[in-house]
Image (tube, rainbow, N blue to C red; front, side, top):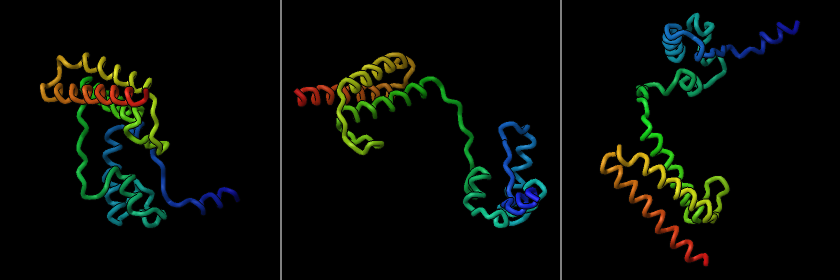
Length: 162
């Protein structure tokens, strides 16, 4: 009796963990999802079109891996220079926030903590020194400029607080 109620409340969709599916199985489901988005049904999706499942077209597109008409660009591997530059960018944003020059997006307040700003700037300098020899000249110049701007603003904020 309870099984009947479960079946009746089933919205007509199925959850598939594609992380564990073999590559050829994942490729076959992409065609089935495309057919389901276009209004047809297939055995892979249980014979139900997205409109039958109670979901919206946007949800069906998100499940399929993107909006229709968009070509997915394969991600390229990131080298250590890219990762370190990303870290520098994060630390730079944090330094601007802790100097009280940029609003904290989480608290929506301008907060000032020069001790944290100093640590962030010192970390940026240490990271920059590690990757500078392998950087292109334009990237190195831009990183030096960011570091110099942070240092100058730190000195200004320190002199204003005294």
